[in-house]
Length: 326
Ligand SMILES: [Zn+2]
Image (cartoon, rainbow, N blue to C red):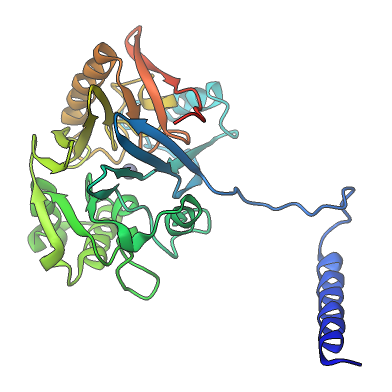
């Protein structure tokens, strides 16, 4: 027997053994093809003038709707709104969608995702960047909209290295001041405390790569910061403009649109200054609706692109039509 055929025989025997072991654990399936059990690459390309942009899903998480998720709406109201949007009963699905913008001179990433080890269905940004043909080492600038866990932990690899080793990291001045204040951290409890810990983990030793930005600053060519505070003290959104085209990146001005665009007065538990967040939301979406600009939402259903229209006391999202033609 040749070495090659002996090896392939052994491999075949091992595969048969593994298949037999697996078969004993699961009920027999009717189809011969096994279920895959996860999504494939979540990548969507769109153009803004000359800029080529890529919406990338870092994944999503399913959570049961708990008491107090919306500060000023009852659990029953939230469950009813979720049901009206056809979420799994009593649950919400939260997507996470960083954006990559190639300006021609700079490769820019807006928000870094959850990073490794949080949950199996998030932290997928690196794998999906690979599927999109984007090398994390080629990212020149990571712009962080605000310093919440789901936007910053992805700055690090599983071993604590830098996921985007050649990138300058830009953070909102007011958010940096709040989250990097040890006195604020000392007073924090519960979820807020874990958020502070995530900021330390994400930015440890990164001070020489971090620069701060403010409202109206051009954080990268054609990408301008728009102050939308309330969700966090320094929460930022962005206008991305090239030629006569302009899209708006809304970060967490609203969380999932099925609830919070429909009900802009609803105060999600994560909004740190809820009244200010409501003001920012209405101002931002009145602008987006008037302008008819395409918006990208970090927590919008993938590919996270759509248009906002006024609808009664709230707004509605018209998803952007999938466009294969760039
Ligand atoms: Zn978020």
